[in-house]
Length: 208
Image (cartoon, rainbow, N blue to C red; front, top):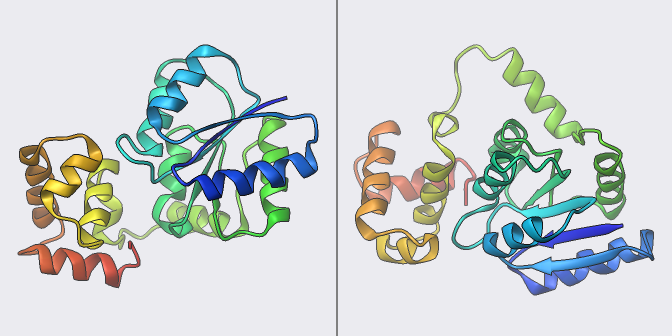
């Protein structure tokens, strides 16, 4: 059994490796810390499952997931995030993920998710199931940020974390002008006036 773990935090990767080895002693586990590493490993060999963090430097997990699927690779992918389910669950499932799990979930839930995804099924927690049900019966009163693109959401979260335009550009490997364009779109789509209001919006909606 080949398992690929993608997370930019070494401590998180180590913890996942130990947990998985307890349940699957014979598993061969590889670790990468960014999107480039994920794509390189996916092109190099086949995997039974990929556990991938959403918030990686450069191209984030959602974009990496979309690239993998665009390349025709159907390996089961379980997305992990420290962000609440209501921020990313629907996005990653629509992008082709096999499941979404909050990093604060219990160990038992992680192992259940891995087992289900490797069996070719979708893993949906009770929280995500509720979100899907609400989305299906949505009355049109969605928060404005739910209509943002994945990249716009990422920039909003980084601005909300207090990063400057240049810092965000460096982290995402994009030009300052490009980040400024995203910032302008955010101000327009969220009907806000400046960075201070963007930060307040991100904090008030639990995006950071």
